Length: 148
Image (cartoon, rainbow, N blue to C red):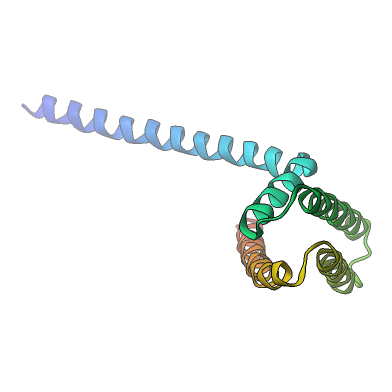
């Protein structure tokens, strides 16, 4: 009887260990695919953004294409800024980032009519806040990992 109980305990612990390893592998695989999806295909991200805005604001095809190009242009500028930051030019980062965002907003104002822009502005501000929160959470996780 003791041997059966002992075997059951050993089996239980070994299963939980394997389950933990599988879970960690799944999480790592998800992170890798997420990195590839997020960072490599700016064209796709611009198209997704244009589709989302077009759907929410009932835009025509010409406006949708202009928004896709404006978003792609903004992403390219942000990537250049990130490259400068990696090269060591961090001091002007926030100002440049704000300028890129302001330029993007002005370009959107030119593309959209007044009622569409009025709907887009709060939608965009909400997205910016969500992105900022996600960035801070990611930064905190990285800092905690560095401390450990």
